[in-house]
Length: 199
Image (cartoon, rainbow, N blue to C red; front, side):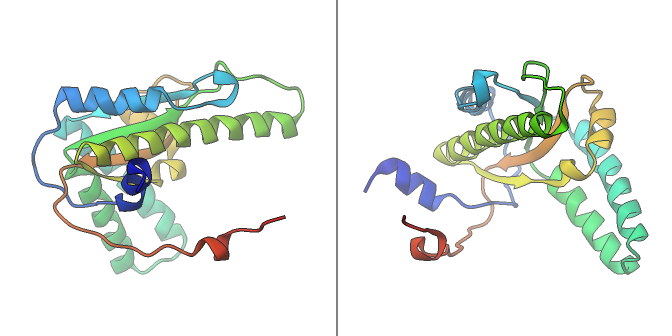
């Protein structure tokens, strides 16, 4: 079997990790995999933040948790549900040995006077950044690491930017939690026939 396909098929989203630190060499390899991703116009709009400090993780998790609590409270969610969601998010962020925050910038993307094309250009940056993230997820698996994509920053990019003091044009897209796996996962996939039209 094709070794790349086997790697793709065996990757899973891992949320529990051993407390073992990730080496600088491994981190550099992850970033290198992201750096060589394809991008719209080859503008490479991705930016990332490597987070290893527990203090930084706690600050980020606390700030994001406060926004999550406020949003769920505004939705009139039951208090027990709110606290469970906030606690789960806090644990996922603070207990991962490594966080990679994926951001995008529109600084080098094309600009248009009309909202439709401007929106599409932004979506191209989003897609490019997501492809870089997928490269990182696959590389993490190839290195024997577990990883999981967290979309939570999409709901509070301003909170993430303030908590990490990011440049003003860096827009948070996702957190990838990374570590040596402390769990195993097996999930099914829909069949090709269920997903495909041939014309």
